[in-house]
Length: 382
Image (cartoon, rainbow, N blue to C red):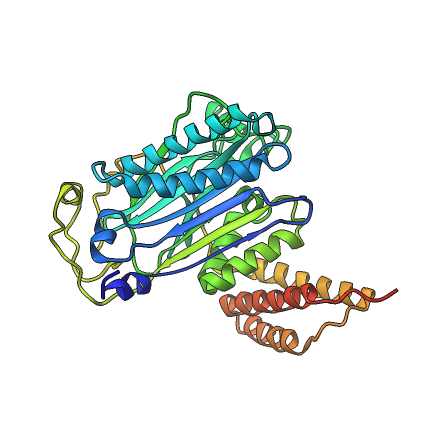
């Protein structure tokens, strides 16, 4: 680890959280984050972030998702001759093969599988290897874009009939995926990107336990007004307050300013890859870090929504807070309301001045506090 490590740590704010949800007996999600620890590591490998959502009876889903994250991180780190996107894609294929081999050795693991999203944040942009219906989003300037294609029956039907993805017939099962690591011998791993990275960009990776409960516009508004830590907590809390039917795993990574210049002439095989893109100038992530408008891999973004802080979402959060208050009173839970009350007062004042971003932030922080208070409840003696 060299003296420049702080530069990489300061170039990105990130948070990762996973939650079992309210209706599952175990958590079959897995995630991993491997940050570059030197200038050369950054230029050659970038930051690697992974989310996997396992499936299979008993503990098989847990095994598959953990095998995916472990194998991808190990395989990607060992590949020194491939360009990063191709090395990442190969690492996912390696994970697929490992899962299939384990599945064949033990009947308990037969047909186990997992989705996977593996995101590289590189000097020339963001690259994704993707299988399944977990998602990667990018928020920028009050717009949220889905950078991955859902390998699901719903999305495949929409493509076949040329329908917008949010207008699929309601009788199509929402949880039926068409591609995953493990179950079938043949697999196609999608590559997406590179997508440009600018200071202030926020990347969100999630399992469908989140995207099934909170829509894109709501996600975007939360990413705008909260830090990565507070955003991940809020998103998990809202997903659970809306039923929490599945495991929920989230990684939020925000590109921030780094004023120290980086090497403009990376050496070796990676230099050839970087030469496809514009010269890196002042910082790791900055408005000058643009790449060609032609995206070499994939066809994304697949959806795009404007998501400025809105009165509508503010009202939803206010309603959730009021329902929370009513439930706690009805059940006589011993919750300290002082901090939540102060947040609510600040939110109401912001609504009055139409500062909806501030109102959303205050309501979210109030809900987060109350959810933590609820988790701290001690069972009453009978």
